[in-house]
Length: 113
Image 1 (cartoon, rainbow, N blue to C red):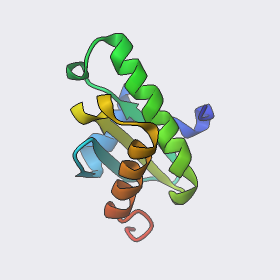
Image 2 (cartoon, rainbow, N blue to C red):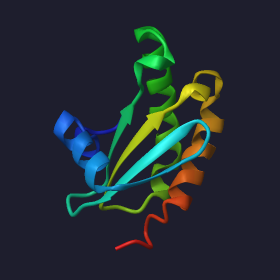
Image 3 (cartoon, one colour):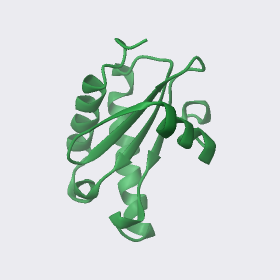
Image 4 (cartoon, helix red, strand yellow):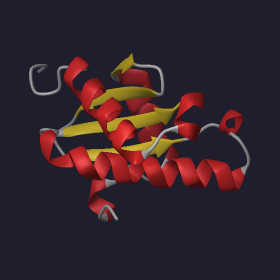
């Protein structure tokens, strides 16, 4: 489990990343990124179109685990939101981790100021 200081928790924090950050996407995920001075924090969003509450929570758990696997590869001082898309329902954790790794590389985290 991620420590609370590494999680985006409030609606306002998510909205700020959506509104002022930039994004990149692949088939199963969208990554929103915002440069911050308060350390690396991440939030997970799974929309209702994914399914009912049980299915959304299952996807969210897999997504959190996938992020945990690649967390050490992400430089600090970034706020990120990982938004799930439909294909996440059938993907395994290892495949989701690879998708997260790809998005982090494409977002050029570490190179942007």
